[in-house]
Image (cartoon, rainbow, N blue to C red; front, top):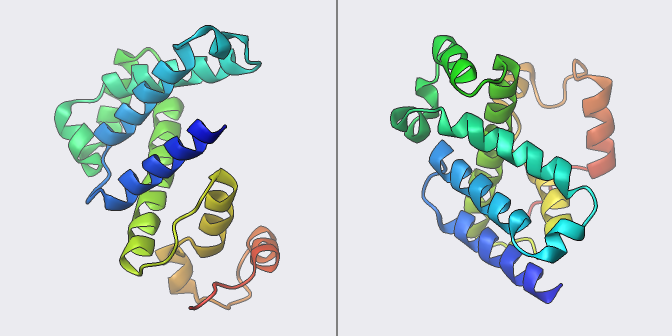
Length: 171
């Protein structure tokens, strides 16, 4: 338990100090997660690891189909290259899109952690703190800003989320 908390803190520090986050970094994360799952008898006995392992193997297969240029610059991924990646990795374009969506989420966490570090605010201590703090403080999308922060055009889901997590705290 203590070892996993230390690993989490090292991972958070690493992400907060990293200048940029690319698909190559995401691929390394997937490979590291796969190595942790496959290592040792204890990991084999845990329930639900087979499904998680299959998911990570699928992500690794897709990420290995990317070119070096695409791994370093995700903006160079076009719809044609997504189709090509799907063919090479023997998956669907929807799987490639889901992987890119997951990557964008991780990139958002990276940007948020970097901003926390620059403002000298405390970094999350565990995964629960990370998920709570990120949901509460995550940057608002530009499309939402264009609509207006307090406009009633927000969906019911977004309004419930604002009520549940409350406004951002200013220090």
